[in-house]
Amino acid sequence: LPDGIVGAPEAGFAGRARGGISYVVYGKTTGTLVDLADVENGTGGFAIAGAFAGDESGRGLSAAGDLNNDCLCDTVVGAPFADPASREAAGETYVVFTPSQAAELFAEAWVDFNHGGASLGTEENPYTTLQQAICFAGPDAVIRVRAGATSETITIDKPVSLNAEGGIVSI
Image (cartoon, rainbow, N blue to C red):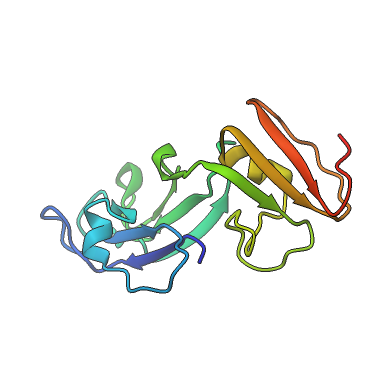
């Protein structure tokens, strides 16, 4: 299952009534229940608390892709009732960069350019790009590439091995 984000815009935190809380929940390989209290305490994700009472941060949420090129999907959080520069309820939008400790590095990662499901880097749910695999590859990892055709510009900034599974990898 991929990462997800859940907004609780009317929740309070640290005395900030209706400041809002957003919960970023890390992806999992099972469908077990996620307790947002655990996420709020840093287990299985992290929480983002609204800056001020009444902001209702988390009313608008979106995955933003990788905005800072660290191979982790970043998040946009909207606080529609925030008061920037003393403009009452003008709203604010925050970009939240996913912390680097969220990335799990793998000794082996799979790539299948034609895969249409969740991209977890496993044989069953492979990444769809080489760059994803390189980003999450641990030191001296093996990246197994299934046969397929693609054109991709990649950055290799660590030692990895590319192994073709049923085809040829040309670099």
